[in-house]
Image (cartoon, rainbow, N blue to C red; front, side):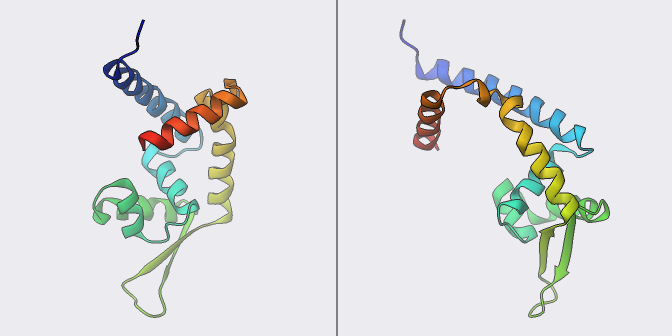
Length: 133
């Protein structure tokens, strides 16, 4: 039986729901919302401003300001004024923020089932994701 593109789309949509559920549970285990977890992940991967985070999340920077405020309040992110432009704030993970996101990411392969894949399956999945993305 041939697998159709529509069937793949349906399965990807179902997987997206499971992914969101699993990531939400992982976030909650670290007392974070999914948006806060995603924000820490994005900062960890080099986004150092609200506008860069908003761009990665495909939303307006004003939507991210409150998230950053809460992460700063929790001691997970620092926000420093740029010496060249006081309007620009540089964001970095604190040691606590780094530890939380790293701990969560260490558990991700098991939570998402990636550890069940063989080396060949991981390589194939990677190639497929890159081709689609």
